[in-house]
Structures are given as structure tokens and as C-alpha cells.
Length: 303
Image 1: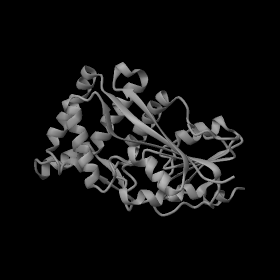
Image 2 (image 1 turned 90 degrees about the horizontal axis):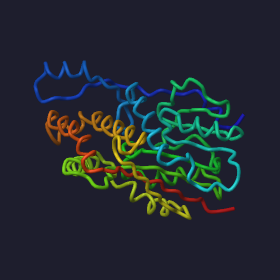
Image 3 (image 1 turned 120 degrees about the horizontal axis):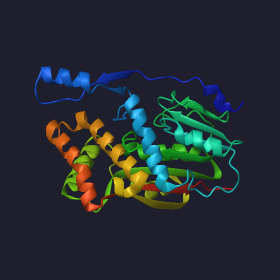
């Protein structure tokens, strides 16, 4: 049994439930909390919920990205991989699908709350508890590929250098890191989309995260010691004009912004925020707005 099989038993973090805050008094807030109740993890900086609605959102986010990216692995692996790690694996779909593609490869998914709702998982895929901010429970040089995706709201800006060094530690000499990140990156934004971008970027920075991490990733990855660093940009036209990916990504974007309602309440009134979100789909259609995400790859020296 591989060493990481020792970590198969997962540990769930305590969670709290909260509702969206409003500015209309205690009675209205209690009513809102009952209607919009969400579950959040304690003791980690992740600002989005961890509940059934979030599981659904992460699933259609996965399919939206894959409809554009077309392949799970961008990094040019030299040989048939023996071991792959998915850090911050979320609902586990990426790891499961990679395990199906490479049945002789050990695929590990690690998360502060590992997935439990997948109906079928290949025998070569496993999910374990781990927090990349505290160090991951694997020996160095363990994996041909370490994959991490969309942790902009989970990794504080000051922690990225440490996180990238930790990820690179786990890669075998000659192996690869593949990091997908997104922020508020729009092509052809209308005025409301531009307002949303500026507001959310200011909020993200205020919460201690890096709103430009997708653009900064190549520099940080080189500073961590990676070579052959390359960034690819993928664009998705929001809504019906973008096909399946656009429809899914529009739904994903609105769900993310809705989940942040409580946290943006200090920046603008909640009702104004909701009105802004409700107006976005029509503006995206009128302007042909495209959302971008960025995939950065880098190789560990050696071999």
C-alpha cells in the first residue's frame, strides 16, 4: 500500500451555519438566515460555503472549465504517470476523471473536507484530509503531477510563496505543477461588470487574498524554483452565446457572487448588491462579455 494510504481516514473540520446579513433589522435578518442558510468551515481562511449548494456549484464549474479547456492535464508529462495529486480537490470530479483515464496511476485528492458524495470512484483514486497551508502529509518527490485549481479565496496572498514551495516539494524531479486560477477577468465588460470587477477585487484584497493571483502566478512559481514556466489563458463567452461552457459559467459566476453576499455587505447595501447581480446576464448578452481563467504550468528541476 502506498504511504499515503495511511491517511485514508478523513477528518472533517467543524462547520458553522450562517445566513446572509441584511440592513433591515433583526427580524428581517432572522427571516433571511432561515431562507438563505449556508454552511461555512471554521479555522480555515476559505470564504465560500461548504454545503450541498456549493457542491453543486463546484460540479458545474468543473464542467464549464472542461468544456473550454478540453483536457484535464495541460502539462506535458514525459511518461505514463505513476502518481498524481489534486490539491484542494473540492468535489473530487477532476481526480476521479483523471483516475479513469489513467487506471494504473495512483490519483490522490486532498482537501480540508474531502468529498463524500461521489457515487463511484475508481480503485486507483483516493481522497484524504490535508491543508496545504499547514503542509501536506506526503513525502517529497512523490508525484509526477501536482494539480491545484481555483484557490484564490482559500490561500491568503502572503501564503502563496510557501504554498508553491510545498507543492513543488511533492513533485518528482522532472515532474510538473499545474495551477488554474481566476479572478475578475473580463473581456468586453459592460459598466455593471466593470463595477462588479472593481468592487470584488477591492473586497478580495481587503480580505487578505490576491485578486491578481492568476496573473502573478508565473512569477511566483519561478521564485519557488520551477522552470519551463508557461501560462495559458482560456476565455468563455458568458451565457447562451458561449454554448454549454458559457451557460454553466454564467450560473457558476452568479452562484459565487451570491455566496459572497454576506461578506460584501460592508461594501454596499445587500439589496443593491442583489440588483447588480440580477442585471448581469442581460448585460453579458448585450456586450458579448467573455470571462477568462489562467492555467500556469511549471517543471521541477532535475532528472
